[in-house]
Image: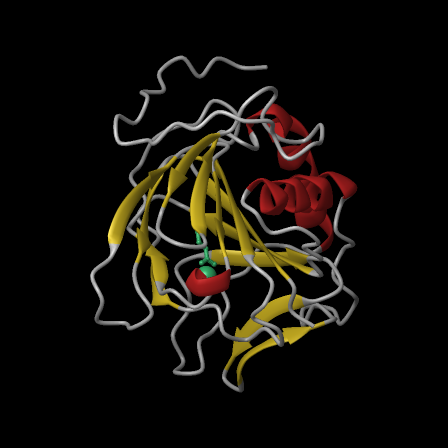
Length: 234
Ligand code: SIN
Ligand code: FE2
């Protein structure tokens, strides 16, 4: 375990203690929740206890399926580098956005989803009130300093009944959490290492994005932020 004593508690957090989603992967005794409206919540530090194994698995996946800057349908290179694990991986190129069972770099299946990823994602979903989450896709985003992700909805999945589970590791970031219309105002939600955001039900199609990453050095990951986004895509 490494020291993260520099963390400052968020005064705006509505703290509601209760049993963690019934498993070993989440918070030990209680879950610190910050609701973001109906169907959406930040589970503060929910992934912190398993950060070492998550980071180890990201590096193992990266060795098989390297991070790459994918091309948008409009021909721009994405600022965020991406890879995937699980049965399906999210990809974008000149042909559009889609899920693909194969890594376009090399044509092999994406690396399988590690058990630790599955456990964490399903426990976080359950802690947020979404039982029976069955993620088959994990998009892994890597943000270097200054990288940002513009406002978008996750709309390439087949079934919007299942939630999104989004895990933050490494440098802190500001998550923009908007409404169902692109023009709706966005909440600015600070996310730190180990925080997990879950949104589903009435929140499933809310716009979201990430402001340009501030430079810094994380004790475990160094000068970067990693985000794991779990979805039921197929
Ligand atoms: C995403 O929307 O795919 C990623 C969000 C994040 O990096 O927190
Ligand atoms: Fe997204």
